[in-house]
Length: 243
Image (tube, rainbow, N blue to C red):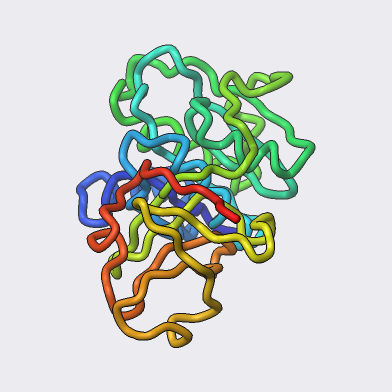
């Protein structure tokens, strides 16, 4: 059992250690897995697609804390989602909704209104991490969870025809799942039509293409090059499936 962290805090920020310490204070010795701390800042929809792709590979017994929360301290509520054996804790702003809906059946609870001791701009540390630590330790019943019929914010569970992440190599992940991609189709990106390859070695250095990455997403790449720079891509850049 572990608490798994997915945030937009940045891996070298002072926020990451504070969240891990919050877990330790509630349940000493509980393992913390730093899944990803470079989710696109403020980009809830892109982050939801990236989170879903990562969560599908996690052992079901873990509890995920997901935080991309530009509305922290405002009227949005905190929530706990149980979907397909995976438990997720985070803001009810759409971030968890994609994973919930794609599992088909899910349960949702809302967290009580935070007390005055909670920093209004750091619910990741003061609300979500402690809640996840209690749940992982089998003490979820002490949180005062409010059973709900549905999430307050639910994004479309359809694939997203946009760039959702650029990795350190310049490869650009899309929100398109490879198993849904039409056979024989191309991808229009940055005004260029790209064809599909299986691996990088299938194309000569400098050639742009797309392929199915290790998370099962369609990814834009340049063989031995930086696709985002070459094609002018960033998070939110549109892509289009073409014949």
